[in-house]
Image (cartoon, rainbow, N blue to C red; front, side):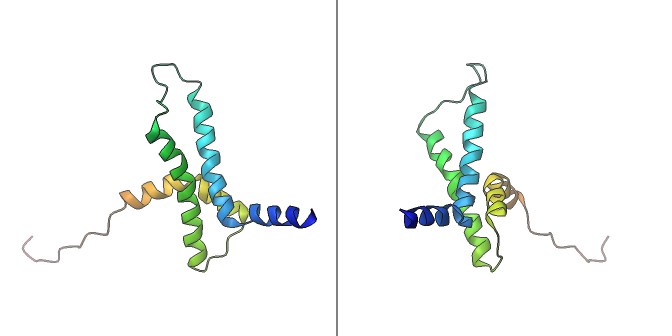
Length: 108
């Protein structure tokens, strides 16, 4: 019995698990908040909704995994934060553009 409790504690203390839980907490929060919206603004809970519902936690896990692969040692709390902010991290990565080259021509 004690071994199973230790294995469960080890599982939940993993940074990857914390990243997944962070993304899941964000989705659960958004789902609860959507119940407070008027019926007109309430999101439809179709297949696409549920696919994205599980996409964000997986993305949080992936970002934590990338941190760990790059040699950055992060603990559970930071991993939870990465999971919570994974949509914003992805948005920043998508919207960032490489620096433009500066023209040095003397025609100006």
